[in-house]
View: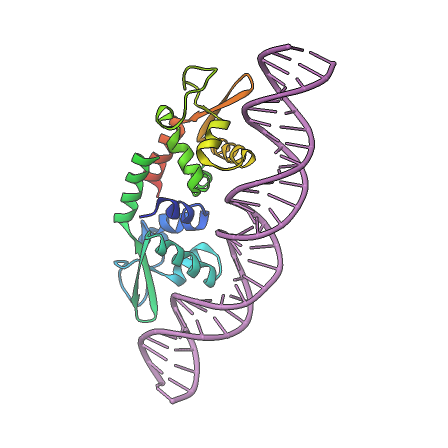
Length: 100
Length: 100
DNA sequence: TCTAAATATCGCAATTTGTAGATATGTGTG
DNA sequence: CACACATATCTACAAATTGCGATATTTAGA
């Protein structure tokens, strides 16, 4: 868990929003047709629509957030779903509280 | 209190360290000759020595952190002392906890 | 196996950041 | 007032980030 790396990931409005949106997928995304639930998060396409940026940009952002361990990808067929890594997010907050 | 702005300020190792060092000036800086205490924080020169970067760079960093409300400057004669803005730092942590 | 859809990666232009040296601005002292 | 010192600001340039379109990769299905 790298605080600086996480801070970099979260120093961009869109990436911060993605993390927030993923906290409540039902409220922020339309249901996915093929899967009936959000257990593994939300697919790239839906995140892209919500954010209004290009597919490549969103894919890059998600990759960056994943490298910072903030989100976890799961592949279902041709879709990749991303969900929050609550464990790391909690560790991050606690580390900040202590360390900052 | 702008979370994104604070995250930007804290996405650099040196700036993060400055905030940490200022938490315990006695442990991290030599005493200032003219003032006998750290009530208003630490002067730029001492922060510069600790960080090992140029005067202009440190001054720029401190300015950036001040704009993000993380630190508070106080002028004493020709010295500017910087101390932590504990109120904002606490607000920041709490906002992250809620908001992230 | 050919195709289409979803995602990932590459290459690029524009913008921002990191860092330094040079210079300007304030401030105490002779 | 002139000088020295602490700090701030300006200028410059290399490196990183933003964001896009084009292309590659993966996978389901005809």
